[in-house]
Amino acid sequence: MAPSFSSYLDISQLNEPRSPDWWARWAGWGGFFPPLLLGVFRDRLGVVWPGFLLLSAVACLLWWMNGRVFLTREEALATKLPPAPTHTADRVRAGAWATLWTSVLIAAIVLGSRNLQNFDLALVIYTFAIIFATWGVIYHYSVWIRKPPTYVYWKRGWQLFKERGVIRSFGQLITVASTHLLGQTFIAKRSRLRWLMHQLIFWGCVLAVMITFPLVFGWIHFSSAPNDQMTYVTYLFGFPAGRFHLHTFTALMLFHGLDVAAVLVLGGIALSLWRRMRDEGARAVQTLAMDFWPLILLFAISITGLALTVSQEWLGGSFYDFIAILHAITVIAALLYLPFGKFFHIFQRPAQLGVKLYQRAGDEGEGAICARCRERYASLMHVDDLKRVLPQVGFNYSMSGPVGNWQELCPACKRKSLSLAQLRLKEEANG
Image (tube, helix red, strand yellow):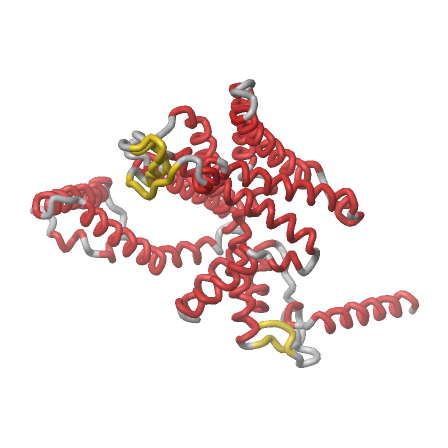
């Protein structure tokens, strides 16, 4: 007798051993319904996008169910495993996420360029470099986010975002993003020179990325209007998004936007070198790999990019091919360096939004009371997280006696306890 449909939906049987044929039946449902669903929408409505939208909604629902049911069970099991299998699982998980999002990017390139119709084959080497950099950045970020200290902020950030209300939390994140990501006001408190340096490099790189990546992917392209050769039409994902006349300020800024970005970056590099040559504190800790190599890459990209404009505008195209190859080498080197060097902090910085939300929630929540002086010294949430995370990274501060953990003392009482312990040891040594 063939099994009934209800036997496929019996979740309690998932933990029982099954033959490969049972999993094939489950996979069969996934391959059976979507084509029928898309066919119904195509026949009834003449379009298929509602079917993809419904499939996306089902995928989001399954993602939510996975986080609520299976992921919590997996995390509880991971805490009991030795470090080596846990690290291996984190690397495999990071590789899977990197492959998934890189595949999404490739699909977006194909679809956004109208099946590569608007894709410039001369830029294919840049595309491959960006794809590689994307995989490396997501892999590195996934491994970094799974480290115990970082993972606490990650989980707490999302938890607080939901508990404090989406509208309230979103408003706070917008405020923090404007000050800490865009304005970078925390750097201005240290030095106005450093703030200006960071702003020039930051906005120059942002402008360059906003122009270069859509052009490389074929998401944006320009074409002259059919009835007016002096008018250019801007196409976004293959749809007309605007038009402008040649020999206007708009055309000048669009065609020389990368030159503006290069000038901004060069200004930031000049200020950075000025500071590093005059600041004794910076000179004492600076290294070639972390401080000068990123500046060298940005300098090479900017100079060769400006050289292309100089060759085109004033030298009649002389040395243009050589400069173009040199510029491509510098850009590709920077993209390949992106996941591994100092540039990676660009992707780590947005995580500061969750840290700020964590700190604000801690200040407003219940405080941790020092076991010795009975004064509030930190948020209770922060101290509890420290007690849970420190053993995971090899530090166990549990103590015997009335104070069960070293983290239950405020900084002042910790210093006093160390001084008293040193005095007691000295007295014992002196007899």
